[in-house]
Length: 422
Image (cartoon, rainbow, N blue to C red; front, side, top):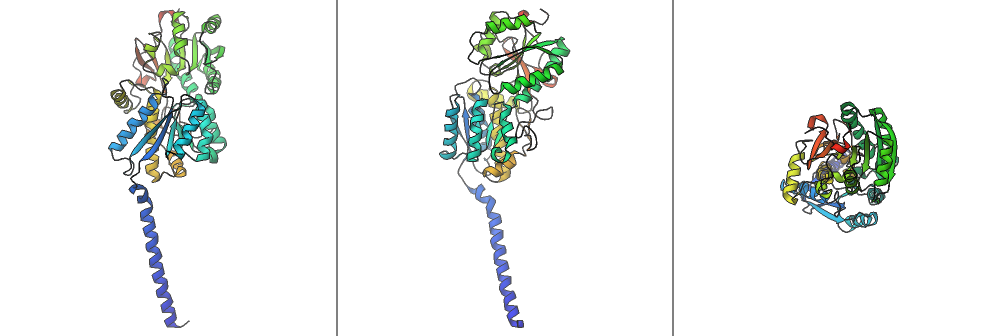
């Protein structure tokens, strides 16, 4: 090759290099702004049991979060739009709503249901349609078990509420402190509804109650359709436990009213999800007095600096305090928004990668998710430096926080007919 030919070749190569460098730079600088410059809203679907006590707060909590984020400019200039669906507590209706949310309404993520059976029905669809799904209230361990067993398929599902295993451990932690150490109780009977979420809950109770110092003397699982709890209470009275440890969600009003009317001489403790509703006192005509329950937040307990302000905003907008799914749905909209912002995209795989990095102080505590190698993959991390839960008790018409001690507003107080000393 002559010197002149070599010079011409180098010159052409130099032009080619500059051109490709310019194209690469243009591509790089425009990739992220393409997302940011879009004016279309980012849609988040909310599938909830609008007619139920627990589910009614879900879309409201989500909407308040969206309004706050939008007031501050949205996500990279794009507004959040909440698209709500009433699933009528039906798995079939939930699946149809999920399909519609993805195919017709073009949502970027879905917050869905406090019913474990519903979320378990939606989980395969989240996998098929590659749609990030977070539950604000379901508890079954099977939800995270599926993610752990087949991560690549089910990685789109996240558990935004304490699993049944975490709830049983929280109840046992509180029982050790309040009932065993504080009230010298020694025996317990488990009374749970027969549902997907209570199977692992009861397994957890069976394992951790004895470790907490409570010998299990009876274990009853009843149909959620039960209307007369007299035979159950009679059986429990025959075993003379110091306390009844509950696992109930679909029921609540009926056993509470009958417990009071029949003057059952055994106090209750554990999980009573309907008791989390601010209307539970009125719903039971005051029979709720003395009923405690595990929760993640309440309108009067400063679980974090965000808890009470959110509850106040919810009450100002809807005229009542939020049920537990209101708190979690509120947090989950922020968690989804932050993931999209960090990813610079609504691409589901990129969103999942960022959701896995979540470390967000919300209304219910410091929200983090267990990783791929943990048995509760994508479950909410439980513990004092994460979400530890809280126990409140209905006292004189109010939800009074009694555990943990750092946020407690009062002490355990049972009505005279069920007082442990009776």
